[in-house]
Length: 495
Image 1 (cartoon, rainbow, N blue to C red):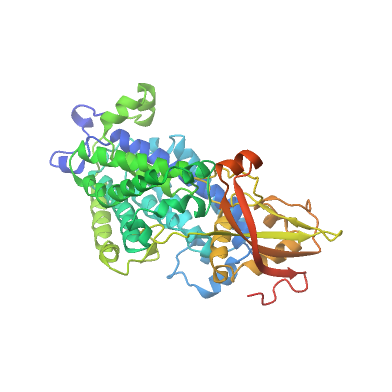
Image 2 (image 1 turned 180 degrees about the vertical axis):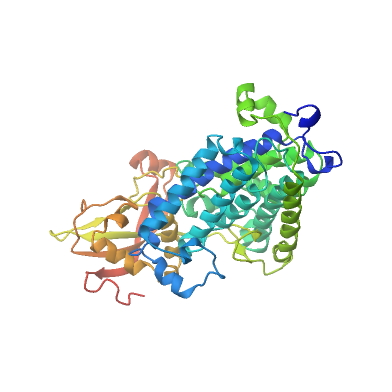
């Protein structure tokens, strides 16, 4: 791929070990796909951040910065905070990512290309480190870790560094193995292969096909779980074998992740796993799959000699990652394995896992406002279940943060304690930023007389109920989650 003759060799004599000759297209596909996920992440932050963590947000950043110092959570916002500056950071990140997706960054000189990727990583890390519980999900640290490694993949004119591509495999290995181990150590239903009898119904944010996945035959659910165990506990070890074995193992993971994409909304977790797996696939696969014009666009330049300073930087980063990996590795082998944890503030090497336990019953919080006629009207959320007849939408890789936290709040009131009273107050104020987080405002921007929250037990309808009602959900009232409040009592102790 794209190797020039003579002085344009892809590497200097004696540096053959440094170059991944079979990684030109894989690197390019990976970087463009990662840029697309960066666009999604920054746009989601810009659209939701002011209402969640802004100066009048549900958990304001200025309050957080008074408690947490720069060393604990490095961020540009320690230097200066305003809602406008936050939006400037987000839209700058989205713009840089869009230019990278369009292929501009790959065509810049090596120093400039590296600077763009470094800026993307630093800006998004700054958002995550002040995002508090809203940015506490595993895929946030995963994007930071993968984004940091992307800084050292080079531009289109530098041969793909083998060591960095191997570090990407190391991330994918820990992501899959960590998820597999947390399941085997956690809920017994993973060991008796019955978790999928419940998971599609009780997962945080079902997708449009989740109802159908839930109604697959029980034996097929068991096959799904068994296949998942093989994919997460056995297949990852093949990532470090020679091609084509590594590519086959990555392909198995990629297909499994697409299956998960179809069955639910998990932000960019599954998509980032797909992107990591794509970086492992050999160039022969991409050359077969992609038309030649697309290949020429992805790899636009002939390779020049690898600069020695660049090779030195790659070696230093590789050594750093290996040193920082010891705590995640200890966590993997520990009986008390932590799930989705970062061990240092830059989130360079993290530990991952998902669904160590599976809830068997789904509860949902329904928020209602009282109109002037004494009628309670339901607010509609974008992604989480609401009215029984509203079919779930597909939002991933976009992340609806408030909807996800509402799922956690329904599990336990302690998850809601830091922010739920303020959410009720913002609804009473008809706060425009908060209302933009919702799909339906039954008051069309007017203030309600009071608001309350009810707790419902949700279950999927049967095939017969679906045919009769066209509704995918059935719900029964469990009780009151938050008693009716007015502006005078909105932030009183409701716990």
